[in-house]
Image (tube, rainbow over all chains, first blue to last red; front, side, top):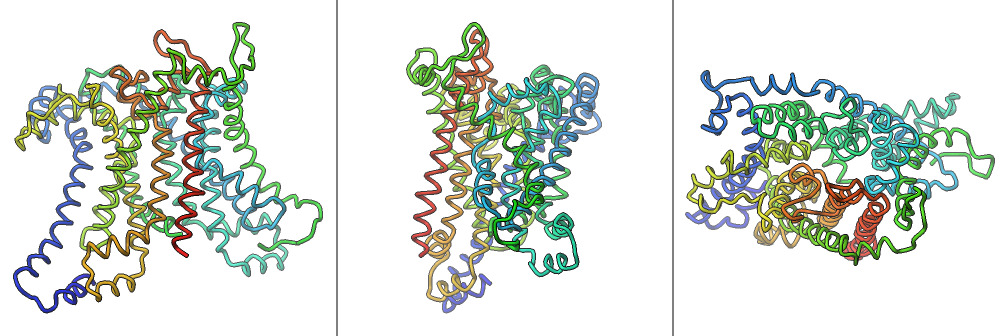
Length: 293
Length: 308
């Protein structure tokens, strides 16, 4: 496409200048993109390769890949024996998984009501539910903590989960109701004529917006998994610490043990990186699609 | 929008559908936000009861010799933090998006790699850069030496004059993927006929970009701007991870988020103060809300006027 249009512009001039431009036009973008890609992965790669080396090799030859003489797993041994890594990991999975489930369930129910029924106060309810898209829940922390104390939910995963559900709902409802509006009306009316209840129609619409559910799922999941603030404020105990908080505390204690620091960073990164590699195309495509709306 | 019109009793199924979301959201988001704003007008006495004090907390925050320097310092630093994102992150995001949107091979690969840091947590990012920039390890120094710039190396994160900008740039490094993907989506959504017409008229790539593409993606520029604003004035994790709650050296990296945390929970000799914490949060609320309102009423309206 671009080549044909360029030849339109420079059609009469097939001289050196034109060929040079064409060459640069193809080369410079790749140079910039490649350099920036290197900048993006370089720090991560440095941590990963050095986590498998002896302390001496980490400092002696930081840029080298581990080899037979520099390979060491001592950092990983320290992390697995001295930290609550497994417990933290399970906590993170429970918190993220349960929050996500309820965000999608409650969010889709509310989105269905807002997009399907023309009731009094519809617009007002939609507006009320979208305040949280722009105003961060963090700003209510002082009262949120008091509320958690009153409910006896401090240092429980339930407390965290409730906060994350509240945090995830506004954007979920906003996006899902846009998608649900596109479900053909005839489909639902046909089911109604057949005597389906409104609840049945909701369960019928849900699979039709599955791509949107998937995209929202990924986007709500990452901030919950990575959050440091609420685990720190609401559930800082060793028993309830999530992986993000656990790693933060572990790193604070072992700051001079470079093997342990590099290994715990690697262990914390790998699950997210694997998920990212699997879902990245879908994820980026869904932002692209969402942004076009 | 198919429902029985008229004003019969409110249909029960609508209540069932809305109730769970509205209840959880109201109880754990709206109530804490409102109650926290209320608390900013109260003080807790030695008898552990709340006393209404009007605007005293705000006056303390703006003028008291203990609070005021920290508040104005954090606000100033937060503005610097935001400006670095606007001037570095978003232009780089736009550049990368423009390069990606112009086609060529490897687009998917670049997109995936460039977006990767965004999915990692602040804690990981903070520590990684702490290590890379550490004079102890010397990785950054060796790289600068290799290109003959070794003398430029400083312990940037440790110096009062450079720590804030360094942390801002680390955050830019992490989040450049978001403006990139949003700009990219906007750019590939431009109808090809518009661009083709301009090219036939002899416009260069540069002209096509600034005269046609950029004006068409202005709505996205606004969205990126407001997302950056809200994210930056709510930031905390990265600075807490790299510098701790004291946001050193000498508070040079202190922003609203770290000030909020410190004021609420206390740090070292300073006792935690929930109502003053709520006051700092209320200031953050006012700042973020003003940004959102300016975006909604000034920017969006102007964009719509231009489009018509």
